[in-house]
Length: 522
Image (tube, rainbow, N blue to C red):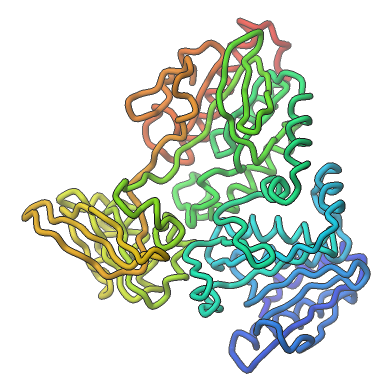
């Protein structure tokens, strides 16, 4: 199951396992069971602390594997074969169950260990989903730290019957004790806030005690990471406050235009950016959203949870998000057939008909990817021609289960109150109305800057909501800089965002030297 190179790497990692682990596998006669059993045996061969127990539970999902610490009595389960993006989740589960310390801070560990009621999490994923591992790994850390908490990763493509019963049409979908807990990206801090009300208050109190920053970066995508690194390298007291580190890049499957790296994936790049930032003394405050900023003695940054941070300068790098179609049914059926990430949610529509709205690169790429999974893909493009690169158009036209309509205006997304059942569109040439019988709609029509929270502030925005900046990343508000996709910088690309973040950070440094008299660079 595992090749020699991976085994060699794992054997080295598994030297950190300090206590016995049982891999309890529940199998049947399927090919996936054979794969899972082979994986378990390979893992056990790499450490004397790992053993395999077969068919321990007649009521377990099949195939499934439980990583159990015999000393701590903890359980982390995987229903399906945790490969693809979830292989790292499995490896971390083994390490943490075997006594290798987690990266939890003291407050988080205290909160988790203080939970005294049983919590059973189930998280439905797609193995092609880039967002899912973040959620799976956060839940696994909980389970590895407290035996009253259990968690199970469930491959939605493999356990289709459960997916249908629970009407799951988006991943990751998390259930707690049988009830829907969350859907979409959620971090450890968010989970703790939901299961322990004291955690949220502790977080507010901790943030309120922080001294003013020289530079506070708002947003943790490529622009924010770049700004943080450049500020820290100047010897400035630097903080990052972000809803989730990595931003939209974490949801990007393939990156092939990042200069000097021929090909990578979003989650891998995000991990590398985070590691680079944390090489410096940067205070990263994940899981927080900024509500507003104001100029007093310092720049005051109020968070949605009521906490307040202060800074001498700010770099705003809140990025952008997928644009909505804004037709009846879209909001009602979000997560129930209306989706924005084909890589994440595509496997849930295996063998069904879907539509893609948008004929740019992202839309045609989505159609090509989905065509390998679903029965049929219909692409609807509002303009009179596709905007995608010709190589992508040619590929889409070569696939027999892709149909493309231009001059097609989506007018309504239909459903049966539980899930999407169809879509209506109008031919803009003939004004003729058409209907599609489909199970899913993937919206791929561009980006909207995440700047709504700045409306009513001193910061100037364009009619499209972009922050107006000059060639140094300065906004019209003294001490406030901006970078990346949320700004008027042309061409929304990762490599441009990185440069934009560096520019804004250097602009903030120059401002501090000139206006604030802050100590000089490192």
